[in-house]
Image 1: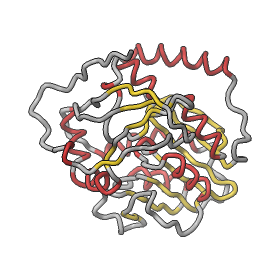
Image 2 (image 1 turned 135 degrees about the horizontal axis):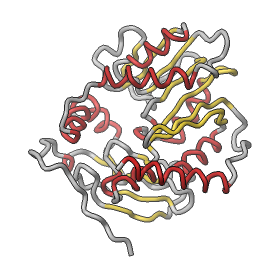
Image 3 (image 1 turned 120 degrees about the horizontal axis):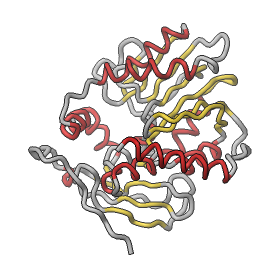
Length: 294
Protein backbone atom coordinates (compact mmCIF):
# COMPACT_ATOMS: atom_id res chain seq x y z
CA UNK A 1 0.00 0.00 0.00
CA UNK A 2 1.28 3.44 -0.94
CA UNK A 3 0.36 6.41 1.23
CA UNK A 4 0.13 9.70 -0.63
CA UNK A 5 1.41 12.78 1.18
CA UNK A 6 -0.57 15.96 0.72
CA UNK A 7 1.03 18.35 -1.73
CA UNK A 8 1.95 21.69 -0.22
CA UNK A 9 0.84 24.34 -2.68
CA UNK A 10 1.90 27.91 -1.82
CA UNK A 11 -0.84 29.84 -0.03
CA UNK A 12 -1.79 32.55 -2.51
CA UNK A 13 -4.44 33.28 -5.12
CA UNK A 14 -5.26 30.25 -7.29
CA UNK A 15 -3.47 30.05 -10.60
CA UNK A 16 -6.10 30.82 -13.23
CA UNK A 17 -5.60 28.02 -15.72
CA UNK A 18 -7.81 24.98 -16.14
CA UNK A 19 -5.61 21.91 -16.33
CA UNK A 20 -8.63 19.62 -16.29
CA UNK A 21 -9.84 21.10 -19.60
CA UNK A 22 -6.61 20.31 -21.47
CA UNK A 23 -6.61 17.42 -23.97
CA UNK A 24 -4.70 14.42 -22.64
CA UNK A 25 -3.29 11.06 -23.69
CA UNK A 26 -2.36 7.93 -21.77
CA UNK A 27 1.03 6.22 -21.89
CA UNK A 28 0.81 2.55 -22.89
CA UNK A 29 4.44 1.51 -22.24
CA UNK A 30 7.56 2.82 -20.53
CA UNK A 31 9.40 5.13 -22.92
CA UNK A 32 12.81 3.90 -21.76
CA UNK A 33 12.46 0.11 -21.66
CA UNK A 34 9.02 -0.69 -23.09
CA UNK A 35 7.78 -2.15 -19.81
CA UNK A 36 4.04 -2.24 -19.19
CA UNK A 37 3.97 -2.83 -15.42
CA UNK A 38 4.38 0.13 -13.13
CA UNK A 39 3.58 1.44 -9.67
CA UNK A 40 1.35 4.49 -9.22
CA UNK A 41 3.01 6.93 -6.81
CA UNK A 42 0.81 10.03 -6.63
CA UNK A 43 -2.33 11.61 -8.05
CA UNK A 44 -1.37 15.29 -7.70
CA UNK A 45 1.64 17.37 -8.65
CA UNK A 46 3.34 20.20 -6.79
CA UNK A 47 0.96 22.78 -8.27
CA UNK A 48 -2.06 20.81 -7.08
CA UNK A 49 -3.07 19.63 -10.57
CA UNK A 50 -4.72 16.20 -10.80
CA UNK A 51 -2.00 14.29 -12.62
CA UNK A 52 -0.91 10.72 -11.91
CA UNK A 53 2.76 9.81 -11.46
CA UNK A 54 4.02 6.27 -12.07
CA UNK A 55 7.31 4.37 -11.74
CA UNK A 56 8.27 1.67 -14.24
CA UNK A 57 8.86 -1.54 -12.31
CA UNK A 58 11.51 -2.72 -14.79
CA UNK A 59 13.82 0.28 -15.15
CA UNK A 60 12.77 2.85 -12.53
CA UNK A 61 11.72 5.61 -14.92
CA UNK A 62 9.20 7.93 -13.24
CA UNK A 63 6.65 9.47 -15.60
CA UNK A 64 3.23 11.11 -15.92
CA UNK A 65 0.16 9.39 -17.39
CA UNK A 66 -2.28 10.56 -18.55
CA UNK A 67 -0.45 13.67 -19.70
CA UNK A 68 -1.29 16.56 -21.97
CA UNK A 69 -1.05 15.99 -25.72
CA UNK A 70 1.82 17.43 -27.74
CA UNK A 71 -0.45 20.20 -29.02
CA UNK A 72 -1.58 21.09 -25.49
CA UNK A 73 2.00 21.18 -24.22
CA UNK A 74 3.02 23.42 -27.14
CA UNK A 75 0.31 25.92 -26.21
CA UNK A 76 1.18 25.58 -22.52
CA UNK A 77 4.83 26.54 -23.10
CA UNK A 78 3.87 29.55 -25.19
CA UNK A 79 1.07 30.94 -23.02
CA UNK A 80 1.22 29.49 -19.50
CA UNK A 81 4.52 27.94 -18.42
CA UNK A 82 6.50 31.00 -17.34
CA UNK A 83 3.51 32.53 -15.56
CA UNK A 84 3.03 29.28 -13.65
CA UNK A 85 6.69 29.21 -12.56
CA UNK A 86 6.49 32.84 -11.42
CA UNK A 87 3.27 32.14 -9.50
CA UNK A 88 4.72 29.10 -7.77
CA UNK A 89 8.00 30.76 -6.82
CA UNK A 90 6.21 34.02 -5.95
CA UNK A 91 8.69 36.10 -7.93
CA UNK A 92 9.15 37.18 -11.58
CA UNK A 93 10.73 34.58 -13.82
CA UNK A 94 13.78 36.34 -15.33
CA UNK A 95 14.88 33.75 -17.84
CA UNK A 96 17.59 35.91 -19.44
CA UNK A 97 19.50 36.45 -16.19
CA UNK A 98 19.02 32.80 -15.31
CA UNK A 99 20.55 31.74 -18.61
CA UNK A 100 23.48 34.10 -18.14
CA UNK A 101 24.27 32.59 -14.73
CA UNK A 102 23.86 29.11 -16.16
CA UNK A 103 26.28 29.80 -19.03
CA UNK A 104 28.94 31.13 -16.65
CA UNK A 105 28.88 27.85 -14.73
CA UNK A 106 28.80 25.73 -17.88
CA UNK A 107 31.83 27.22 -19.65
CA UNK A 108 34.49 25.71 -17.32
CA UNK A 109 32.76 22.33 -17.51
CA UNK A 110 32.84 22.25 -21.30
CA UNK A 111 36.16 23.88 -22.09
CA UNK A 112 38.26 20.72 -21.69
CA UNK A 113 35.99 18.76 -24.07
CA UNK A 114 34.95 21.07 -26.92
CA UNK A 115 36.64 19.52 -29.97
CA UNK A 116 39.44 21.42 -31.65
CA UNK A 117 38.14 23.22 -34.70
CA UNK A 118 34.53 23.13 -33.52
CA UNK A 119 32.31 25.32 -35.70
CA UNK A 120 28.68 24.74 -34.72
CA UNK A 121 26.48 24.70 -31.61
CA UNK A 122 22.87 23.52 -31.23
CA UNK A 123 20.86 24.43 -28.13
CA UNK A 124 17.72 22.30 -27.74
CA UNK A 125 15.01 24.00 -25.70
CA UNK A 126 17.19 27.11 -25.51
CA UNK A 127 14.33 29.60 -25.05
CA UNK A 128 15.59 33.15 -25.82
CA UNK A 129 19.02 31.74 -26.59
CA UNK A 130 21.13 33.68 -24.11
CA UNK A 131 22.98 30.57 -22.94
CA UNK A 132 23.67 29.58 -26.55
CA UNK A 133 24.93 33.07 -27.41
CA UNK A 134 27.37 33.18 -24.47
CA UNK A 135 28.68 29.65 -25.06
CA UNK A 136 29.02 30.29 -28.80
CA UNK A 137 30.92 33.50 -28.17
CA UNK A 138 33.25 31.75 -25.73
CA UNK A 139 34.13 28.91 -28.10
CA UNK A 140 33.84 30.88 -31.36
CA UNK A 141 31.14 28.74 -32.92
CA UNK A 142 27.88 29.51 -34.74
CA UNK A 143 24.77 28.81 -32.67
CA UNK A 144 21.30 27.52 -33.55
CA UNK A 145 18.45 27.31 -31.04
CA UNK A 146 15.40 25.03 -31.22
CA UNK A 147 12.53 25.98 -28.90
CA UNK A 148 8.73 25.78 -29.18
CA UNK A 149 7.90 29.00 -27.36
CA UNK A 150 9.98 31.94 -28.56
CA UNK A 151 8.35 34.73 -30.56
CA UNK A 152 11.68 35.61 -32.20
CA UNK A 153 12.53 32.00 -32.90
CA UNK A 154 13.02 32.54 -36.63
CA UNK A 155 15.65 35.23 -36.06
CA UNK A 156 19.37 34.77 -35.47
CA UNK A 157 19.46 31.00 -35.91
CA UNK A 158 16.38 30.34 -33.79
CA UNK A 159 13.93 27.66 -34.87
CA UNK A 160 10.45 27.74 -33.36
CA UNK A 161 9.26 24.16 -33.03
CA UNK A 162 9.43 21.24 -30.64
CA UNK A 163 12.56 19.13 -30.87
CA UNK A 164 10.45 16.06 -31.65
CA UNK A 165 8.84 17.78 -34.67
CA UNK A 166 12.00 19.45 -35.94
CA UNK A 167 13.54 18.14 -39.18
CA UNK A 168 17.33 18.62 -38.74
CA UNK A 169 19.51 20.01 -41.50
CA UNK A 170 23.02 19.01 -40.47
CA UNK A 171 25.33 17.86 -37.66
CA UNK A 172 26.79 19.82 -34.76
CA UNK A 173 30.08 19.84 -32.88
CA UNK A 174 28.47 20.93 -29.60
CA UNK A 175 24.89 20.19 -28.58
CA UNK A 176 23.26 21.53 -25.41
CA UNK A 177 20.07 20.34 -23.74
CA UNK A 178 20.01 22.52 -20.64
CA UNK A 179 17.39 21.55 -18.04
CA UNK A 180 15.16 20.37 -20.89
CA UNK A 181 15.37 16.59 -21.16
CA UNK A 182 12.71 16.11 -18.44
CA UNK A 183 10.26 18.03 -20.67
CA UNK A 184 10.53 15.81 -23.75
CA UNK A 185 7.51 13.76 -24.74
CA UNK A 186 9.68 11.07 -26.37
CA UNK A 187 12.63 10.77 -24.00
CA UNK A 188 14.47 7.84 -25.58
CA UNK A 189 13.73 8.97 -29.13
CA UNK A 190 14.95 12.48 -28.36
CA UNK A 191 18.29 11.22 -27.02
CA UNK A 192 18.69 8.90 -30.01
CA UNK A 193 18.03 11.88 -32.27
CA UNK A 194 20.71 13.91 -30.50
CA UNK A 195 23.23 11.11 -30.97
CA UNK A 196 22.52 11.17 -34.70
CA UNK A 197 23.10 14.94 -34.84
CA UNK A 198 26.58 14.85 -33.27
CA UNK A 199 29.66 15.04 -35.44
CA UNK A 200 32.10 12.17 -34.91
CA UNK A 201 34.11 14.16 -32.35
CA UNK A 202 31.20 16.22 -31.07
CA UNK A 203 30.09 16.53 -27.45
CA UNK A 204 26.64 16.69 -25.89
CA UNK A 205 25.80 18.42 -22.60
CA UNK A 206 22.58 17.37 -20.90
CA UNK A 207 21.33 17.82 -17.35
CA UNK A 208 18.19 16.92 -15.48
CA UNK A 209 16.71 17.19 -12.02
CA UNK A 210 17.80 14.20 -9.96
CA UNK A 211 14.30 13.18 -8.93
CA UNK A 212 15.45 11.16 -5.93
CA UNK A 213 17.34 14.21 -4.66
CA UNK A 214 14.22 16.35 -5.09
CA UNK A 215 12.11 13.72 -3.33
CA UNK A 216 14.47 13.83 -0.34
CA UNK A 217 14.27 17.63 -0.31
CA UNK A 218 10.49 17.91 -0.45
CA UNK A 219 9.59 14.85 1.61
CA UNK A 220 6.70 13.87 -0.67
CA UNK A 221 6.20 12.42 -4.13
CA UNK A 222 3.63 15.06 -4.98
CA UNK A 223 6.00 17.85 -4.02
CA UNK A 224 8.67 16.44 -6.34
CA UNK A 225 6.62 16.15 -9.55
CA UNK A 226 5.10 18.76 -11.85
CA UNK A 227 3.13 18.71 -15.08
CA UNK A 228 5.95 20.23 -17.15
CA UNK A 229 8.27 17.32 -16.30
CA UNK A 230 6.70 14.46 -18.23
CA UNK A 231 9.64 12.31 -17.07
CA UNK A 232 11.49 12.31 -13.76
CA UNK A 233 14.97 10.84 -13.90
CA UNK A 234 17.10 9.42 -11.14
CA UNK A 235 20.84 9.04 -11.48
CA UNK A 236 20.46 5.32 -12.14
CA UNK A 237 17.57 5.52 -14.62
CA UNK A 238 19.21 8.40 -16.51
CA UNK A 239 22.54 6.63 -16.91
CA UNK A 240 20.86 3.38 -17.93
CA UNK A 241 19.03 5.29 -20.65
CA UNK A 242 22.14 7.13 -21.88
CA UNK A 243 24.04 3.85 -22.01
CA UNK A 244 21.23 2.19 -23.94
CA UNK A 245 21.10 4.82 -26.70
CA UNK A 246 24.88 4.88 -27.21
CA UNK A 247 25.95 8.05 -25.40
CA UNK A 248 29.21 7.62 -23.49
CA UNK A 249 29.92 9.66 -20.34
CA UNK A 250 33.15 11.64 -20.17
CA UNK A 251 32.19 13.88 -17.24
CA UNK A 252 29.48 13.88 -14.57
CA UNK A 253 28.61 17.02 -12.62
CA UNK A 254 26.47 17.52 -9.53
CA UNK A 255 24.86 20.98 -9.43
CA UNK A 256 22.38 21.15 -6.55
CA UNK A 257 19.37 19.03 -7.51
CA UNK A 258 20.63 18.64 -11.08
CA UNK A 259 22.94 16.00 -12.53
CA UNK A 260 24.77 16.97 -15.72
CA UNK A 261 26.76 14.93 -18.21
CA UNK A 262 29.28 15.65 -20.92
CA UNK A 263 28.76 12.87 -23.47
CA UNK A 264 30.24 11.54 -26.70
CA UNK A 265 28.97 9.04 -29.22
CA UNK A 266 29.62 5.43 -28.26
CA UNK A 267 28.42 1.99 -29.27
CA UNK A 268 24.76 1.41 -28.50
CA UNK A 269 24.42 -0.60 -25.29
CA UNK A 270 28.15 -1.38 -25.10
CA UNK A 271 29.34 1.14 -22.52
CA UNK A 272 29.95 -0.32 -19.11
CA UNK A 273 27.78 1.40 -16.46
CA UNK A 274 29.27 2.58 -13.19
CA UNK A 275 29.96 -0.10 -10.62
CA UNK A 276 27.17 -0.72 -8.08
CA UNK A 277 29.57 0.14 -5.25
CA UNK A 278 30.35 3.54 -6.76
CA UNK A 279 26.68 4.29 -7.32
CA UNK A 280 25.91 3.40 -3.69
CA UNK A 281 28.64 5.77 -2.51
CA UNK A 282 27.39 8.58 -4.73
CA UNK A 283 23.85 7.93 -3.53
CA UNK A 284 24.93 8.47 0.06
CA UNK A 285 26.70 11.67 -0.94
CA UNK A 286 23.51 12.92 -2.61
CA UNK A 287 21.52 12.22 0.54
CA UNK A 288 23.86 14.48 2.47
CA UNK A 289 23.67 17.18 -0.19
CA UNK A 290 19.87 17.07 -0.24
CA UNK A 291 19.64 17.37 3.56
CA UNK A 292 21.97 20.39 3.56
CA UNK A 293 19.75 22.27 1.11
CA UNK A 294 16.57 21.97 3.15
